[in-house]
Image (cartoon, rainbow, N blue to C red; front, top):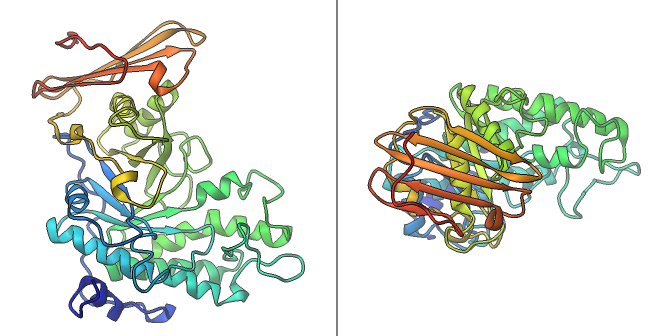
Length: 409
C-alpha cells in the first residue's frame, strides 16, 4: 500500500532513480546459498505479480521455499505505474521475510536489454552515449522498445554492475538471477558466431559480445558480497555451462536449466550438475496447466538426477501472476529424505521403439519411478511415473497405473 509506514514507501525513501543515489540503511546481511534440505522436495518460486502485492498464500509458499526469485514485473502496474521496479521487488521481499526472516530471496535483473520500468533501466535509457547505435547513429532497439547497453565500453559494464549491486543491497537480497544470457545466445550474440545477431554495427557488436560474456559477470561478482548467489539464465546445453556442471560465464557460482524436460538427456544433465556440487535452479517450463498433469513427470525426472544443491521448480506462460505461473504442489511438502543411491536405469529396446525406466530410493522409504516410452511423443502420452512417499501417500502421473507398493530396490 501507499501508507507512510508501508514497505513500499519505506523503500521509496531510500532508493531513487539517480544511479549515484541508490542507498538504503538497514539492509539485511547476505547469507549466501541456502542449505538444501532433503526433508522435503527442495523447491524454488520464480515469478511476480504485476498488478499488486503478493497475496498471503503465495507469500507463505515463498517463505517455505529453498529460495525465491522476484521478477522485475513485480507490482509493475502499481503506483508509480511502470517504474521503480527495484523498490517494488524489495517490498515483496519484505513481505516474504515478515513470514520467514531467514528466507532466501534473489533479485531478478536483465543484462541483455534495457527495461525502462526499472530505475537502472530508466537511467540507462536517458544516457544515449551508453547504448548501442546503428550505422546511422540511432539507438538500436531490437524489439522496437528496449535499447541495448553498450557493454563494449568498460564504463557501461561498471555502471550496470554497480546499479544491480546497489539494488541488491537496498533490498537486502541474497543474490541475483541475471536474465538475458540465453536470449543473447539465441540471437547470435555470442563468441561462437562471427556476425552478431541483430546489431548491424559489427565493430561495436563484437566489442559488445566480449563485454557481456566476459565483463558483466566478473564486474557484478566484484560489486556484490563474496558469498552472494549469482545465477545466470542459460541452458546447460548452451554456452553458459561448461559441460562439467559449472557456469561458463565468468563470475557466476550457480547454473540454471530453463527448459528442463522429461528426457534421459536432461536427467543426465542434472546428475552432472549434482556431481559437481553446483547450486542450480532446475526449471521445468510448463506450457499449460491441468492440475499435476505436466509438473509431476518433470518432478519425477528431476528426482532421478537430483543432488545436494539442485532445486526444482516450474514456471509457465500467462499473465504475471504467481498463482498461475509458479505452481507449488502438495508433493513439495511431503517427507523425502536423502537419496540412498544414484538412480537405477534400464533401457529396453531402443530410442525408436522401446522404453526406459528409472527408479530411485530416498530416505525413510520414499521411492520414485519414471518410465519414458520411445519414440517420445509428449509428456502426457510418453511419460509415466509413480512416487511412493514414506508417509504412505502415492503420487500418480496421468495415464499411469501404480502398484500399491513400490518395487524393492
